[in-house]
Length: 114
Length: 111
Image 1 (cartoon, rainbow over the protein chains, first blue to last red):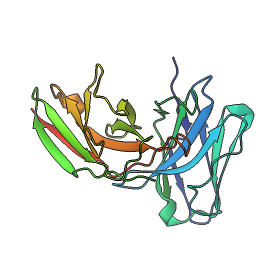
Image 2 (tube, each protein chain N blue to C red):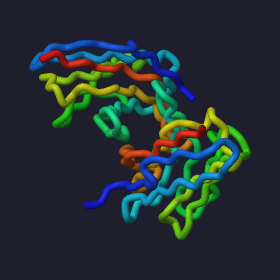
Image 3 (cartoon, chains in turn cyan, orange):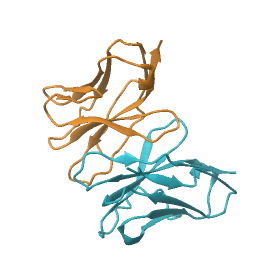
């Protein structure tokens, strides 16, 4: 079956511009996560959605970052007024439920802010 | 978030077993131990997880110390496709299912 998909795969933008990154989780998965991976680093948790509950935004690094999940499926991560330090790979993952031990990751979106 | 400590890199010869260590001295009683790996230019993929007892699956084995302050991921016969960064992660059961990744161990498999 289809895995987690993300688009675009690569994004180059200028400092100060807004960007939107999209994640399509596996169908039927209720939990969705966003992570960020800077060059040579491990993954940094950003935000977590579970069903219709309020998201856990505890990992968002600043108020320039926001995310939505529409209809309990597709999610969009928005970065406003991008900065060079926002350059990273943004990874999305989903799981059947928050109690499911396995998260399935997408291939990521590689963001470069010039 | 609980922390894990892993060596930055390890090497193994092809078709030999590999033991990847992880220390998690601050683990709490309800934390699960997870291992994920990340191949170059890909998202992480699940390898194995456990709580107290040793675990085996088709990919690997997980040996957990009796005091749970350390664990070892065992690849029984390393192949070139096992070259990846291996992450040892603790999942705090009372804070949702988000994972807190460290920097992992970069495994090189030598033909």
